[in-house]
Image (cartoon, rainbow, N blue to C red):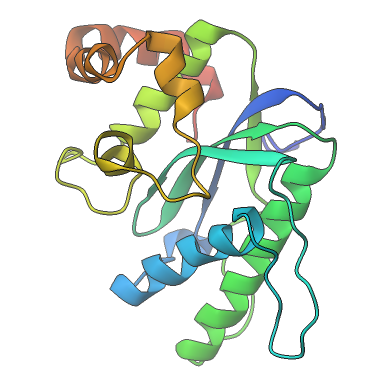
Length: 202
């Protein structure tokens, strides 16, 4: 049976909840440098300036084609909220990020073989209500989510790098204080988890 939520559709002008786990539940991130390298790969593809490799070859420049709206990197998995403007842009981004990071990780730790459990999974978000709940689900993934250093939550309230787009989510709520109240509403959060359970990572 095919894995649930493996990307089978590639629709422009759509929001997606994207996630992936380490193979056999192994850690994807072992130290602070690993987290930093992973995020810097998004900067490579989504920053205003075109990035080049050591030989001067340009990496795909996907700014304007796909947006990263929020993220949470856990030890053995990650969650992303992406908006794809152009068909195929999300696949290009995820292939570049995941392949480059796998090479880095295997080289650093003298490993070989697959780093990930499978190809990334993506669930298309079909409504503003679902979009709100997924944004909260991603940010509240860690138990100590307000202090957790490897999610985009701090960028929402302190300031975001240019490769992270926070405005679309904040605009759904009208203001940051309203979004903060939404994040802190645990009773509503638990209820929303039941509503969107089929769309979340197992």
